[in-house]
Amino acid sequence: MPLTDYLRSAARDSSTAVTSVRRVLVVDDSRAQCRTLASLLTRWGYEVHEAYSADQALAISRNLTIDLIISDWIMPGTTGLELCAAYRASAENAYAYFVVLTSKQSVSDVAEALEAGADDFLTKPVDRAELRARLIAGERIVRMQRDLSRKNELLNTTIGNLNAAHEALRRDLTEARRFQQSLVPERR
Image (cartoon, rainbow, N blue to C red; front, side, top):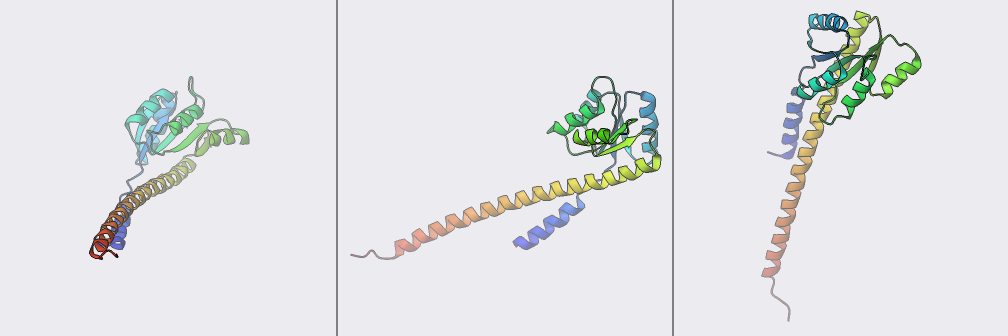
């Protein structure tokens, strides 16, 4: 197959390979808050997983590809921001859009959350319409990131194939040069 056809085919395959972004991990030490949010998200069509601590959330994320994480900031033990930093630092985890929920409202709090790796910040009580809009935006970002990762993998594979073809061509040309030189009589 010619290279241009191969690239077109691979690009077409990668553009249709983007999977649905619908798996949410809700993290809150309050079971009532967690259940309330999980119930709402389930009604919106999300597959929801619940964790009641940062450690439990990290364990779940090691076993599942999570698309969106909604975490309370203030939790006993590991905070939501520490969870976010730990999640981002883990090479095992795919990218997930991370939303921090809190009653904190200052600009410095928002900055602190974003610096810790959060993608978004919502104050409690959460407005349902705003939460839904931000999750939809998060879905778009996750899809774009995954599409970009697939295209990078395709590009790396294509570069590897091109390098292998270049090396094979170089070997063939070296062999052809040797053969051609063997046909030329030596000068005396």
